Amino acid sequence: MLVPRARVAVMALALGVAGWASSARAGEAWVCPDAERAKPNPLAASAENLKHGGEVFGSNCAVCHGPQGKGDGPLAGLHATRTSERPRDLSEAALQKRLTDGEIFWKIGAGLKRGDQVIMPSFEKAMSGEDRWKVVLFVRSLAAPAR
Image 1 (cartoon, rainbow, N blue to C red):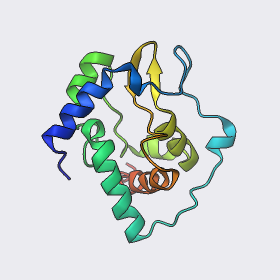
Image 2 (cartoon, rainbow, N blue to C red):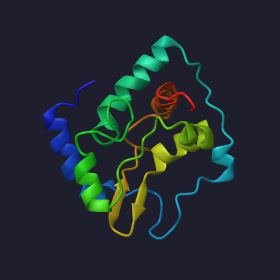
Image 3 (spheres, one colour):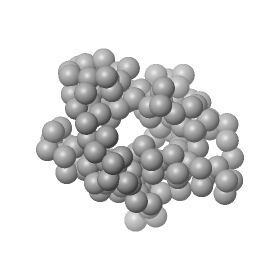
Image 4 (tube, rainbow, N blue to C red):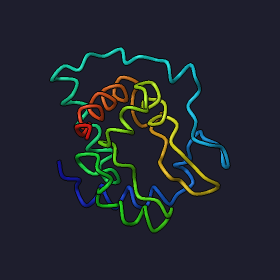
């Protein structure tokens, strides 16, 4: 899934604009509330839901995380330069095991901000709740086999 150059340029600009601020407050750890962490995904991992989740991921997340969630998207280098961190490899078995579906859903919605620096934009308003759950299904489909 390729990200159009125009989309990459828009995301690069957006990542530098305070308007993409997340609901996470500066200085706070990116810790999901227990009630959100416990939420199960209400959607089944059907072919249709996975396809749609992949399309939403491709349009919104792949610019940093890459099409297969490896943290190698077209803006990964810029992200690493700006934040001193590479985007997460969402296919890592340990990460997949540690995060619940509710936590992934919450993090997509909340985003992450440290001070004035947007680490990951909030997608709470940019994606419907249903689309975020479908992205969770897609992220789960990226899981690398455990070693």
